[in-house]
Length: 272
Length: 227
Image (cartoon, rainbow over all chains, first blue to last red):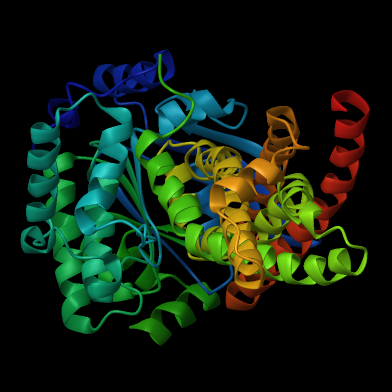
């Protein structure tokens, strides 16, 4: 396994805020993601009610829970697409809930996000999708950029589809491209929103293997939202089950299987 | 220091908003010029003032018809396009993806479209004016042959360059309105495909409405300060 600091792109434009993050991860074993007493409501509907979670670099946490329990909202809070009502989000020891947009963008450069439907830019080709963050946050020359895009696409088995448009490739391929785009800037934190949703079992298995391989190579702190227990068991070190706004259990797959809690037990039986 | 806009995206928008609107704007300008010439001729002949037709036609086109027709045509074509494109990007989380990658979506998507609208509208207006005057001459010369040179000389006998400048450049404001409303409606889209349709419709309706309102206000301002 290769340590994360060896993968930092030499030409990434870094603000003081982003340098602080890299520095923190290099110097200490401080957790990459720490959520404390996180609350979020939409009107009268309480979605997250005091979430407490910690994820270290190199760890993969699978977030489980029923549909509509706020798993995707949690990821959007972590990357700053939504603001929490209260609570703390610390990424590599830096509180992000009170940052202005510029400082937040500097932190986002060090994070990768795979959206549920990949969210590829449909007016851009596969190649341009991957190059999008690289063009804007690095000083790579065109040839360096081309090499990097090919390298990333090769790592997800899509090197022959450079020129295709997102509408011309399957859902599974879109997920792969989305994953390659999320990894473009060598993120320290990777957030995956249902990476295997809507895919057949064989493609799901391939995506799981890909995530495991990338995790080994890049040593990121990963949070994976999923409904797929098989996938969670394969790719995650720990699982956390979200119910009624709180994490009701956190541990290994076996810990969840052995739980006496009725909801946990039903959830595991239903999905297994 | 980085530019406050994305060069490539701006060029793409020049093409989308400018080049691709040109045929429609030119056709609308041409149709208006032809019809204006036909309609005006019968009235002017009635009063024995048909020699005034080139001047009346040119004055009418460069002062009001050209800019307003261009504004309304672009409101329909581009307003709907921007509203639907950004609305679609919003509901498919593409705008969130841009934001998540540390890029400001307002700078990348909105600023480029608004700037393109602002810069392109006066150019499209000139095209509409030219086509209107050209087809006005064609209609006139079919009824009573007159050389294009003479038609233009008579046409601009009562209009100065200044008369042309202020009305043409008030379309900068139309461009600002169309771009801002399209982007605003698109980026606040909610509710899936129905929401995208709603954003496209409201972009066209609001931008057309505000173009007309702005025209009234700007004509008054131009008359006060430039006449």
